[in-house]
Structure formats: C-alpha cells, structure tokens
Length: 339
Image (cartoon, rainbow, N blue to C red):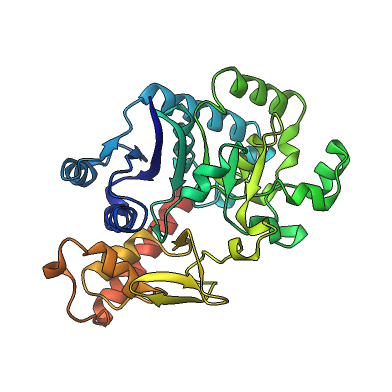
C-alpha cells in the first residue's frame, strides 16, 4: 500500500482532458505524487499509451472491485420507482459508469484525493492531506448551497427520518467531482447493509427523484451511512478557504497560468469544466473556436509538453460541419426514443 495518491476516472473519450489534468497535477500539485486512472470503460488505447509515458501514473486494474461497485449501484437504481418509467424519461447518463470513481475506496492509496478528469489542478493539496488526519471525507464544492428544491438529497424526508435541522443536513451535502478520503471507508459488508436499507426500508426516498442514476446523488446517500466526519472547504470558518471552482459560474484571475478566486485572489484547488462535453474539448484541441470559459488555460495545460501541437489560431466550424452535427444528434435522439 502507498500512503497517499491521486485518482481520476477516464477513457479515450476524455483523453485531451486527462492529459491536461495530469500536466496540471505535475506542475501545480507535485511531480512525484502517484496518480491512478480508474477506467470508465474498456476504451483505453490512448489512455494506456499516455500512462506509459509517465513514470508516476498507473491504471487501476482491480476489476473485481470495479464490478462490485457496478453491481451495487445498478441494484440500487433498479430498485428505485423511476426504473419502471418510460425509456423516454431516462436521463442521458442512464446506465453510465461514472460511479466507478468509487473504486478509489478499494485502491492502493491509504489516503487519496479524487479529481474528475474535466478538471485542472491549481494548487498543492497539503491542506487536504492534513484534514484527512481529522476527517473521513474532505470536499470543496457548493452542492450544499443549492436551493432546497434542487438538492440531490431530499431535505424534506431527511429532516423527518434523521431528526436533523436543515442547517445540520446541509453540512452533509456534497457532490462527487472532487473529494479526499481513506481506503476502505466504504466497501465490502458496508455496501450490503446499505443496499438492504435502501431496498427494504425504502431509503431511496432520501434522494430526490430527479437525481435518479446520478453518481453524485448516490454518493451523497452512501456518505450518510455511519455518520463519517466530513469537512467542506466552502463551509470553513476561514474565509480564505471559501472559493469558487466551476468554469462557467465563478470568476477567476489568471496569474502565470494559475487561477485564483477573483474575490481576494484566493488560491483554488481546481477548476471544474463540468458543463462541457468531452467532444467540446476534442474540437478545441483540433483548433475549433469552441465556446468554453477559460479555454486558454485548458489549452496551456493540454499542450504543456507538446507546444508544437497547440493550435496557433482557433477557427469557427463550417456551416456544413454544424449541419452534420445537428443531423447526427437528431438521429441519435430518435434512435434512443425508438429503442
């Protein structure tokens, strides 16, 4: 076992984002920190090629642990009332594998930090490592600040069954795009107990119906089990800890290709490009002028080790390309409706 490391989740579809993230970790977090890539699926040719070029990056290969999480998550969601709805009502991420990030709890790092691949690391994570001496889970997100009717956990139900105030419950609300934790905090018999409670005691009601098949929603539910000690930097008493992190929502200042919170120039752990698709970044890296906030920063890290391949100038897509994309998207939507 290794005392500490970083995980991410990737496949070839997010290759450009993975390269950018790995470069940002090497420059802004530490070049000697081990990084392990959890496979989203088996489309890994480019990922494996990239891993071979980096001495501190490995591929997570415990498929037994991955499939254990697959089975656990699928059984939970299949027991949800929405599983019987029309296929037309199923979300785009239905039957996806984002939950495989939770295999990090079965990995080789005693303590770890997980980054979504659509992120760039912006500063060292010594503060997270230190917090893990006291806490079981460390977050830096604003999920807890969402309006009551939009939180993934159902506050109406939880207030009744847990006998906690809304303020207390919001301390437990978080997403799953970036977190620090410890090996085996969840796993094994814990998952069997959680599954039984979910199904037999109808605890699926603890998650808002609109969050069906959401990895973040299921993670929020799981982390209520055993009442783990949780720290969220955005709820810190220290104002210096409270920063933004979302590319299309928060204003940042670029100083030498490192982003800082605009308010007070506070260092941020990472910038998260959560509202953009992987194809957007593929097209950007091919020289297309895709409308992505902080795209210059992304391109800097993506081509940090290959400056000769960085697009010299970004161009708008042709009308033919736009029409072909529209038709392809419409066809796929129609195919989903028919199937």
